[in-house]
Length: 96
Image (cartoon, rainbow, N blue to C red; front, side, top):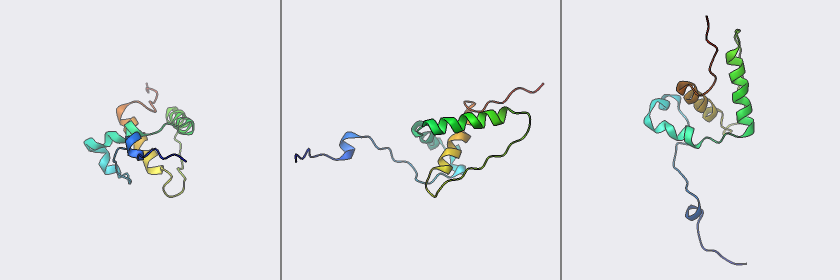
């Protein structure tokens, strides 16, 4: 077995960011890390498309966000909130 002698940090850049997302922190300038580092998997993209369709309906809708502790529910909601604020997600139809 050959040793390469190195650490993960020698090969990969790891950015420090909070491990807990607090929605009051989304207004801070440091909130950009969430959008920049959020991994848009196929499943996440599917959920964002579904939410977009629901927001475009003329009737109200409800959504449950269910997941185990630490599965990323708050990160998903924070990402969604930032995208909504920036106008990049879930644009609704213009009402007459």
